[in-house]
Image (tube, rainbow, N blue to C red):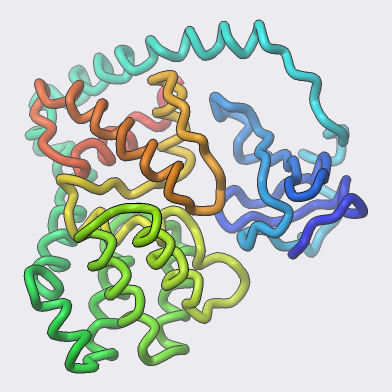
Length: 301
């Protein structure tokens, strides 16, 4: 869907943030108010590109939670925003304190391991067993498209990182095109070997070309999950709401955009490494631990 000024006031659906209202369109960007982000530290409004693939027109054009939301650009309140950001710096300390009280064994606590770590580490093991070392390249070279697709499909179902809608989108894409998974794996292996703007662009394109309905396939979790499972010492799975919340807690600028891009991902990796250093004294050893910490602390206010 390409948003235009005529769409101001219209209700739209986002594949992750669900229903929203278009407040302003000034090409190439649109401002959209999402009800699901009402409690986000950055507020409910997001600035997206006018052609963001995750956006579609809602089948309903009236919603009690959105009908009263006015259109037009909000006037910035710099002083208040600055004060809010300053206060959020201390929220990381509070999250760590909560984590230590909730999980006395810290990152080795069995309750924590069972709740969020075990499945992700198992998925990492599956990736390595099937695609690690030269195994992935050999499968690609042998044209084992169905085998590759089956493993990728299983990996997307193995964790709570992609949403149900995102998992279904990938599943459909893998089934509709015989070698779609092979192109994705090839791009993932190239990116893991040398992460930069060019290899991220190849990864983006490979995921974007999955023949899924709508734009549900081209999301941050879908683009970043496999590198994360391939090498969790180096790569992070970017789940937008959790990652944005942690960035606010750390007063860290992600240069966030809903469309997957290298500058935002590179910033996310830097932030994640800072967080890993902070959590290392509690036993965190890689990005699986960091991502799990983001997840279990997501509902703290």
